Image 1 (spheres, each protein chain N blue to C red):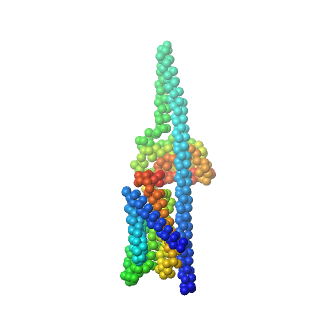
Image 2 (cartoon, chains in turn yellow, purple):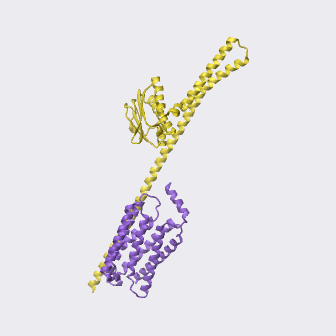
Image 3 (cartoon, each protein chain N blue to C red):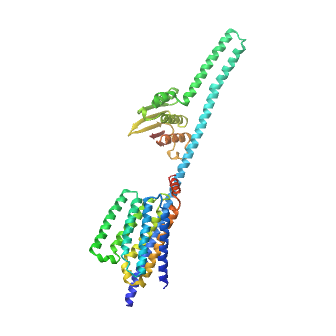
Length: 263
Length: 225
């Protein structure tokens, strides 16, 4: 009987140990799950914060670009329009005083007409720079070609373009963004890249718009790009973000730059 | 003598927490999902079975046959609960297939061996407990990386209690054959684990369902943000 009892006791002990082990396994498992859950969520929050910082930087860049643009417009208005209007004002006052000879009168009149014409031309140029009318009327292809022609005539850089996509694919806002990106890239090539040639191609592949820009300038080290993003590039980045596109920039020292955007 | 007191203490605490849970869950009944209502049905069902078992044992009537209703009822209700809760179609299919296979097997064992009705049915225990444990793992898998997911605490309780008690119930016949006084520590342990399980269910209610529904919608908005 005693032997039986101790055998029973052993079985009970084994069962109890088994159950306790199960409890241990369950607790360990739950702890593991909750701790890793916490970790994952922390990581997610971290990523979100990074994203927010990135967006903040883009917004800052946008604001800075906006301010610079305003400054430039103010400068243009002041230099080209206001100064000429001042001249006209002066001549008009001369006419008002009235004690001029006939030849003087004719000359002042001519000056006024000339100054008015110049002012008109300046105003038209400023407006054109702000928003090229050709973009609105004839679309991105014509606008970029015109832009390329302007630069080609100035002999600063030689630009070739290969643009082929149905016009209805992009709305006017998207066209403007792409146009601004092109402008920015060309400016960068001239100002920082010291490039002599650049190519612009926009094509439709697999239902997606592929925008590619290459130049033969001094380029930069691709690895540094993350650390040293200038306002220009950030501006491009924010425009690409608005277009819901994907931007990739490739460059190496003295090997030019290649920017591709897929929308 | 001491362990008898502990056993009674835990058993009665278990009844008490179960009763509290039943009341609180029923009070939050309105505008809740079907899954929540399944939990209420489960709590009510277990409470009724516990009360009948208590009544029978108090009157010295054999009450082991109730365990079958308890196990199978628990299996079907939790299968339905996880069927509602899990999102992946493959999990839902698994639940339906397992539910039909397990009920068939259990039915066959009773047909072949009717006297199983008066003992613990080992097949019934293993086949009705393990799927639920696996479903709870499915739910852990689905809620991974999701913040403030509901039923996670309840799910933890289910996982914890079913995993530990499977062994106790599987050894039930063996324990009962050793005579009451020797087997008692194990039933005490079971009663203790059951109290913890019910506390998990209570915390689930307290954390996620205590407030009226409008507030919980706001919580979901926070998750989306």
